[in-house]
Image (tube, rainbow, N blue to C red; front, side, top):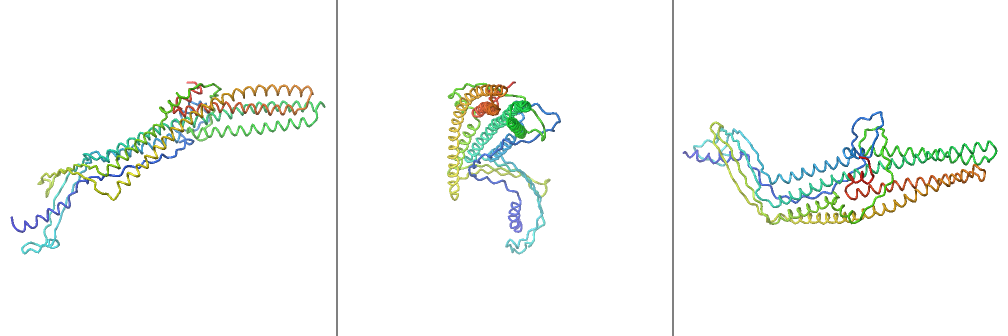
Length: 474
């Protein structure tokens, strides 16, 4: 081998190595993931689906709930959140899975030896042109990395929390849809009550007019009856408008096409509900998806702390391998390979590991506080709903009796007025008493059914509990 060859070969080898794609570097231990707070989700919106028909729909509460669970914005938003968190877990898993890549190059080079500081007599200053081809596959596998393992477990718990939050979203959608449906029933009942009161006011106005024409009552009685008639007409118009607005609220929550008219078919009459506090609390803690999501968030934060602490002292082991084919042409090439195993031991990272640990510990405290707050809130919600159920059930009974008394009072006032014993002041006052009694009864009945919906939601079983507590038809 000549001196020229001995001098040039090292340069060619260095140049060739510089052109070969290097295997991927071992990923450094990353900080523990920061657990994000859940987004604020609206359950009053939806994605309208379908085409509006000219024929009004007959919509039961079950139908409304079914549509809400398909098209409500809260369901769709939480579904996207779950997909995002699943992708984050997949990203955490990727650091522990094999990473495979491949590359191929073809070079043509000419070297200026003088540029490398070689001034040997008899050796040309310029070598080349020459070329070679290289194709290789590279594999990297993390054998052990405690930080990545704990980050993966933290991401897994975060995924569980997101899935449970999406499950709880169904609970909240049922509550929102049921309350919107209940508002329509309640306000429509007021329309019927006011219509009856308007019919009565019209009859009393006609009687007062006839009696005035007969000369048996003064004109003031006709004016008084007319004022009451106009008042009831005004109330009826306002109440009908409220029902239409209630329908818009429900349509928005369940994704009905814009402009679609519908009629509700369920009436939800009064039915008492008997419950036991201790059983309900246990059921709530076992079934509430948001409570289980909060527990999963705590576990995720605990794993995040372990991942951050592992950055202090736990080594990571990585294996890298490559196999390729190199030569001036692939026809005259030969195989090459490399196998490298390495250990990386953390010594000092500028305090980053300590800051990651402090951040993760603060997140854990926050999640634990949120969990205990939710535990107390569940206890409060259950107890509060039970108090409401008992109180409102009593109010329904009183209001029903009051309607009967007000109806009897109005009948006697009409008889007295018809007999000429008194003017129609008593009749107008009795009308007002009956109107108030009807409103109180409808309001207390609505509150009782609303408390049932709240109870099913507080137990975390609204999807099954609302139809059961409201005695809906299958």
